[in-house]
Image (cartoon, rainbow, N blue to C red; front, side, top):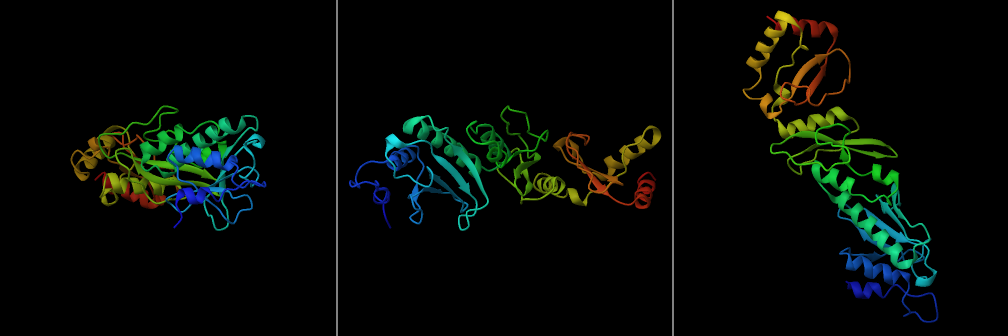
Length: 295
């Protein structure tokens, strides 16, 4: 296995003096100094530098498919995150230099974007995901920023451009990311690094999170929506009798019937501030359930 120094020597100048330092050497040395281990794609015409990530994806860095040009001729680095290195797609452009910075400033800006992107891409847990997303530099294009996981808008833990803070107890939320193929979601927790599987829709992601934070919630009864007057008091008494003691004090969800299919679960609408979970049934079944619950 080659050492880093041996791999670095594979970057050669396109001149009669192959030992002459080139832009790729400056980029290589700067990456190593930043704690990022690069490698070289030997199949690329210009010896593209690569950064292999733990999940099998990779970042390529070149200037117009070349890293072997003289530093004085350098214009701008281009860094692309390939999610499937075998066929080079899908991908996200995470840095494109403006072309007027010079080798030193452009390399520094490129590495800043790459380091922030790697941190965001390899983070785990809702708080870490949100805060690394907020820390992405403005040099990262909008499409790439949207492809990083973040807490869903207005969901538990979301606080605009302010950092998220961990909670003292397991608290469900969900993460979003927006790809060319559509939006993906996954359940997450505000107190730990747990994350659920990727889901195409919001409700299953929230339900995954509740499996983590409030196991057993699926076995609890589904109740009619609150009514006014005497029925309201009877419904509350029935709820208190069938849900576990102190359930809502821990942010536990409340399950209610809805006649609308795929109606979104609502954060903060359960008695203790937890999720209101919408369970779809037909009008007839809902009416029957309501009559039974109020007996």
